[in-house]
Length: 474
Image (cartoon, rainbow, N blue to C red; front, side, top):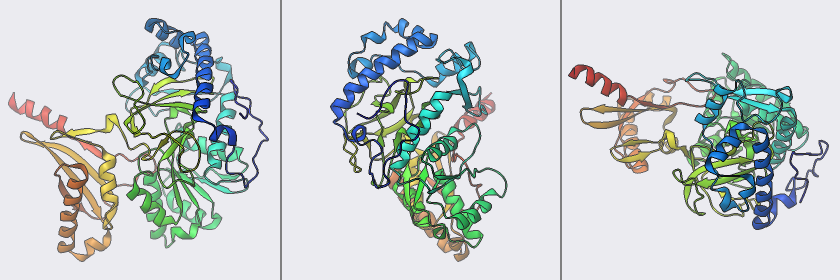
């Protein structure tokens, strides 16, 4: 197959012919069985590398009675214990700042990213200089499948900060020899400015979260601009469920008259574009197994589930040398099927994308509910004003679900009758969609702030109710 070594050694000047469908045709369309044999060999190499360089992995595997030489098949690999985010944080407490799973000398660290730490200790991502180049090559290869070619303008409309998403797209765009426009997001008034720049430069592709994409369209219209006049062809989304939810995807596609592509795994797993849709798929993503090995596992045993079933993704780097993740448990939820995907690549295909997180799921009156399911129902309503909040509370002995959704300004202007019709319609559709009766409250468009990053729409007040009840009882 095309160059595939560890550590990676890609030709920085390589570019396919612009008419070529695949960046690496052999690697992307090879027989899955042959690819799996190559992956088993690579897993052995990566595990031996981590065992030699990282006390974190050496101690973890020794305690489990696992040695890299024991792994002769993908079934053997399922015996390797998963890594959790909590373990990574503990490692970085033991060995500040990068943890004892850093496998390169600190002098080789080229970029530092991480979590914000707003709800606890931040997690630090150390990216080596060689890894930075490998990520650029990996992302360029995946972005080729988005239809992006040298000379195109790529507008990066997400935060440039600790958040690695924007940087990853910028890296791929630069490696693709595009005109990269790292505009960013987050400053006051920046969204209106972005709309004007988009109208002026007319990029081929834009990168942002689905929520921000809808907000940007709203602001553009308030500024007297039509988002279709931006002439975008591709909208690249990550950071939250949405772009694989048909109603959300369709709203974005209609607003901009552009193809919507969902992508992304975890910041720890950069190159996070190893899960991505493309221009030949209407929804869902493929897993680029020769960049990151993806397993879909039972969330208790962490053994792979059969194709056609749902589980939680577990990820293993096949090219990273700085902080390689080996069987990192994601906490996301997906369903996979055997390839080939609609694009002809012989990778596993996840037709619904990542449609939720296990820890985002809440149980109310015995039913498991994912916030993305509510998002899907509301975005399918033409009268939906663009934002909502889900409040889980308790009234006496029963859990209650309240959905407060914005109506369009036209509905509000039409008066009480139109508002009540929307309330009843939303109540019926939400109950059908999630199997739980909810109380629907209608608020005016613009009530809730728009997110320029990942939207947070669920408020669980049940713990507050219990604490107040306990105080009253005492």
